[in-house]
Length: 223
Length: 226
Image (tube, rainbow over all chains, first blue to last red; front, side, top):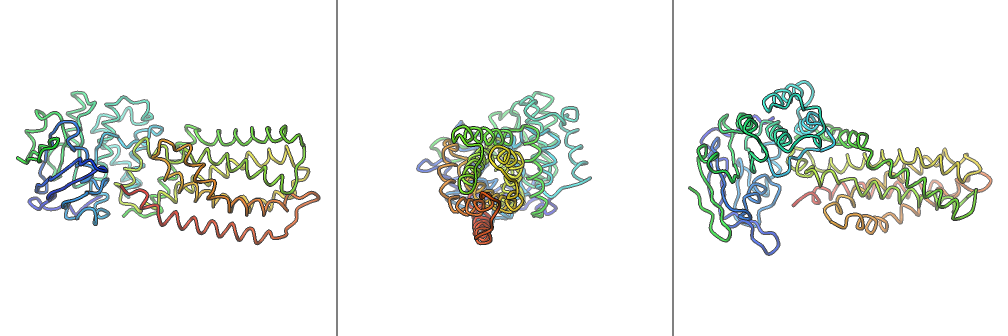
């Protein structure tokens, strides 16, 4: 678990002219912003504007094609390896193995992040309770509804207490109760920096410190 | 960074648990091997094989059965986002190669636990050669696990995965098969096992294992990169 969270006020993200190409197609171009540690950035834009690409670049899952990206003090892509374990990524895929139960999945991810034994069991129990998943935790993931999988994915995302949360449509498939429970786990506060991609600005704009609007073939705008 | 042995154990345990629960690879591999022996038995119209023919039938069957498992080795990682999970975790990515190769090695040993006795039952007059054959099987399995893991990780993102694995893998394992059949042939000779050039073939197998083990470990990190 990380213990070197940057102090509030220090920059968690610094992007300048960030670009990402897929072959000859440019998915992301000219993104620039600065986000202080502990702040929330909400990313808006139509389908295909590059929101998911931006998150995957920040998560070190994609290499930037150009520009500058410094995440938690680490320059991408050169220092990407230093970021592993400091980021909580919630993407379109829950990153859960369907043949394993929710508890087994969380145990697997805990071990990958160096959390084992009683500490892992306690942390997993705490998260499952917070997500309202205790009673379904021992069922195989492929037997769970999409909303239940999303709750487990949120547990996985924060299992190792990351400094930076990268959340792609975190409310997907969640009912009203699920959204409230998720807010407790991945909502603002607690000193964590958050980047939230959403198509639901009414819900997420009130908690945003900055808003990034991405357009197709338009310059990115920060407000 | 999470210690490599912890990550290795976590990935290997996850794979074995998943296979034991779903039985997606091992039964198919074993069934393929048994069916192929039946086909050889009736196709060759022989109740007894020895020497190079016995060695060829055994290794061709084991190799093609292994391809079934190799094809599926990384499917869960691709379809369920496991590659991203590994890339986000503070672990040496080569650990994934080592854990997957270990899982494949266990599948191959389990396959042989079923296939070799059936092969002996169908085709061998004497089982004397089976004890030294264990060394050949183990060394050949190590090489097949290393090469198979490497090729499977390269092919898994392709839609033509089922075609790519045999097309790329089979030429690469030709030296392994030459050494394995060369070492096995005198062990299954008519009149009892012989050991001419046995040590040489074992050394060739060991060298192949070392080379492909090191190549896989060295390049795997790059294969996981965007």
